[in-house]
Image (cartoon, rainbow, N blue to C red; front, side, top):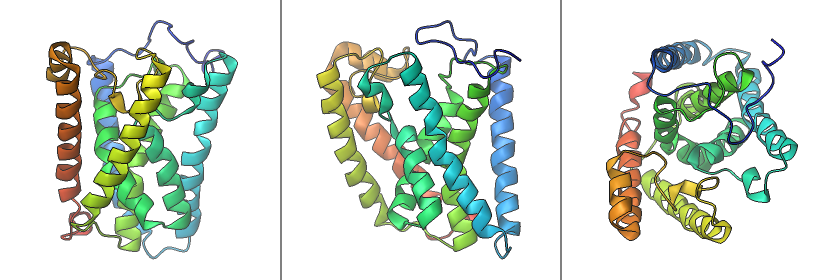
Length: 245
């Protein structure tokens, strides 16, 4: 237990290995938790504890970032390590604000970025294994990115409309451009690769092959692919409000 609250130093050997039995079991548990959360949300729709539950989720999402700041501070990491590197990092902030304020723009962005959280959990890059707290915080943060907007759909009857894709796309592409510029200035692609604009997030994929052929080909295909995934993910929640049916 003495190592439970300790994190692996930057560049340290990862305890958690992708695409193993442990990884598969983790994904199964994540799916179960998301399913049970949706069932639970339907029961609290008219409950007196709704505000307490919503505020608790929002506050946890925001304060969970403290451990990231402490990690960067304790290991004397550069200033850019305090910035969210991809949509999941931003979704934790925006999702937390959404739960506290019911802001609809934050709802739209957090929901559309949910596909990124799902992909991240399927290909987790967390260093810590089951014997450390950060493994569980990592999984919970990404689960909350997915279920927080679903909470707003079920409990507060929020809906995703066709026009919301434009909001998601233009805000996201603006952030991607700014993030790409910051990443270029920092020029440390192995340690800081905002929105994966310098190189693919994983090796051995079609995107990494395109990157080897031509950087600009990679950027164009990556942005188009990410936009398509967001669009398809958003379709699940459009108008018909499938979650509530």
